[in-house]
Amino acid sequence: MKSVLGVTLGHDTSFAHIVDGKIAAVMEAERYFRQKRYKLHCITMEPGKHPSGYQYVSLDDMELFLGMVAKEWGKKFDALAVQNQGRVEEFKNFQTILAKNGFEFGAAYHIDHHLSHAALAFFTSPFDEALILSYDGEGNDGQTLIFGGKGSQIEYLHNDPMRFGQSYNNMGYIAGIKPEVEGTTSGKAMGLTAYGEVIQEWLPYAREYVKKYVKAAPRKIEGLNKYGKAHRINDIALRDIPDLKKFLVPDEEEGGVKGMVKNLIGEGKVLRLNGPEDKTAQNFSHTVQAAWTEAVIELLKPYFGKHQNLCVVGGCALNGITNYEIQQLGVFKATHFVPNPSDCGLSAGAALYVYWAHGNNGAFKGYGEYFSPYLGLEAFDKNDLPALREQYPHMDLTPGETPALLASLVFSDYIVGVIRGRYEVGPRALGNRSILCNPLNKDMKDIVNKKVKHREWYRPFAPIAAAESATQYFTNTEDIPYMSVICYTKEEYRDILPSITHVDGSSRLQTLREDAHPFMHKTLKEFEKLSGMPIMLNTSFNPGGEPILNFYAVGLEMLKTTELDFVLIEDTLFCKPGREEIFASIKKS
Image (cartoon, rainbow, N blue to C red; front, side, top):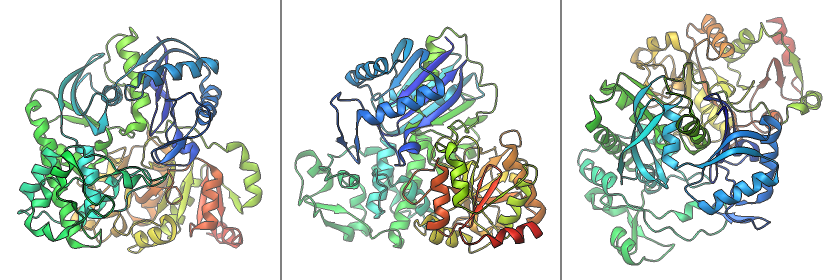
């Protein structure tokens, strides 16, 4: 077996192409359809649009996406690997659609949810043996699972009923955080925890909440883009905190509940705090985060000393606070994270599992190279660039001068969007679809939040740093190539790097090696010549509410709709229409 087509259906739909045990490319549907966590289904073969949670789905979208797959990767594969939460009928439907569109494959495999997660983590790691923790909201094979990986085999070791993903998301609802369009609060909640502190008297209740959280009955979804209404607050144990009883409010939407759920949340009341600005909500979030991390570590304790290496995957692997605490234990010789641990990585995981477990390809002995995140496609509208050049003022650069010029613009406090090469997979910008800014400017966080990103005040921005210098400025003990671990800015640099240091001193660091991204590494080194530090502020390049972009036109449009100063596309620098004179000053400098 040489090539495998991997597919995950449902939210975070993606397709992956595995060649000789390596991930050759990944396509994420959200990047094309410009809606976060976009889903493609074929649960029904009926034509037309069908409501599915927070969006409509249609077979037309599926076939459109398959057309891109065929164009990029062809139609013939040795095997098909599908993860779709175990929906057997949909698996059959999908094979029918593939055949209709001329796709051929030797064998088809239906791979379970967490097994796909685990395979992605293990089969991209440098290890030939590892413990694997996979945890998220819910999968057809469980919520929280521990596996053992060795050679070409992955073994289920423990299936735990704790629902870490749901309990953390629910925490954000209780705190009063406005969810994203698809209903998640987790990313925002993680940023809010830094503003609070652990309240010791609340901690026993928070521990009980994390361990006893169970899925409550969903509300009826009231139309598209109102997914938040489908979430019922579950405040088991937390409602018993004496200090929080005053925040129990009538459940106005339902006016009370029945049966099991009534016993969980009380007589028509729910715990609802006053939102991110309120100190109680901040302390509450921090306390639950602490209890949540404790529970994760307790889950791993039985395996201490039995495995040298640890892989962490699933949506909860995006919790960099917990990841840092795991590393700080020093129990595992090395830890491995991936850039796409949430469900967008399931297609690649399913395909890797089929390649190694069913492909007669021998024993896995480690990935053998740096697992590059730059696996997406080049810009979808790449062929439109000549026309876009006519619409926006631009300046062509020679490749050799681009890193120094980019560093100079950032040092001069300009805000620059970058679109280069293939996009980085997963939810975090890692240099190819990034907005870069000056981390030394104490006002830059507020400037970017208000004028470009238009997002909540309490959410932090991340630094990107040359890996060989990172430990001088930050407390990381290993490289952090995918922004997976939240460490701290060292105290002596916090005032010097104010815009990438969160309120508690923490830092969502990405470290970069020269061989991983020569262009961006060179840019960091050029910035160091100007600032003394090979560090820049790095945030995702996307319009508010949308996923990270992969259209040139979308990035250039932000020159008009936001106060973004420049967009760098490969080696061409674009600026706002009407500001052509700025190029003259750049050329002089």
